[in-house]
Image 1 (spheres, rainbow, N blue to C red):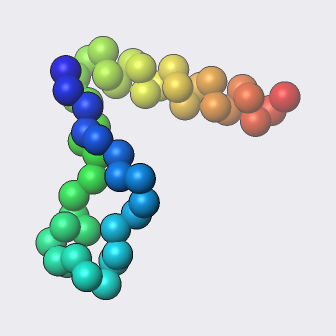
Image 2: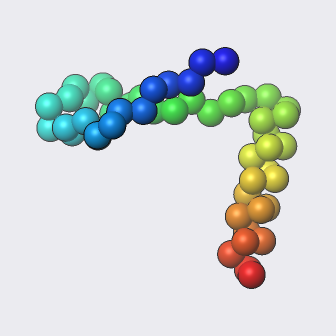
Image 3: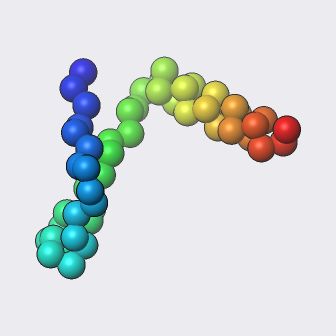
Amino acid sequence: MKRAKRLARPRNPVARSPLLAKGGEHEAKGKHAKRARQKARLRRQLAEEL
């Protein structure tokens, strides 16, 4: 699966179209992605407690 290229510097928010603000990274969907998000959330919570 291809990944989006990251810009070396952020775009100028004044010069871009307001419709572009609605974009962003897409979240994976499905049973496996949901479980991965749950596990990542749990790992973050455990890391904060330590």
